[in-house]
Length: 181
Image 1: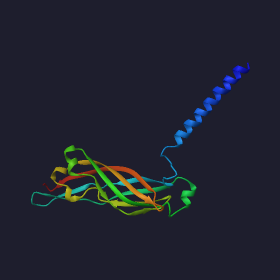
Image 2 (image 1 turned 30 degrees about the vertical axis):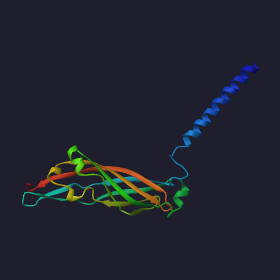
Image 3 (image 1 turned 120 degrees about the horizontal axis):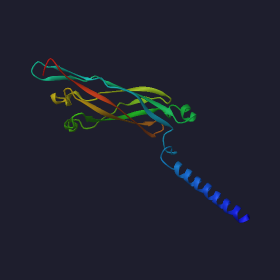
Image 4 (image 1 turned 90 degrees about the horizontal axis):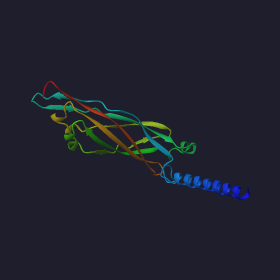
């Protein structure tokens, strides 16, 4: 009987040790290292107006690109992070826009574009980043009536210098030229 109890104790102890090792392995990932920011940058809403086209009267088309907006939020990971503004406020330093057109032949004409909006998002607050979804000079008649899925990568730093990123997206529609092209 004593031997059977010792076997169970050894087995139970082995299972507990294995569970502790597994738990330690799970916490050693990059999910929330001590070196990471105390806040999370989030994309809440993206508004991308369609591109309008108007005939120039000489057989060409003039495209009008209206400014797009993205509402970003900074969420604290803890109450301590929330109370430590401005150190956990985020300065958005860059926005990289990538394009995937409904006609893949257009993709090489619009390589990824990086801008530097320089917008501060307060911890536990929101702010808007304004940007042009595409440069009007890139568009020509081959873009009329086309659409693209955009990938938006926002990158910035907290007040204490820790890097943060957020990924968002949206659709860009280029209307056909009005008045004939």
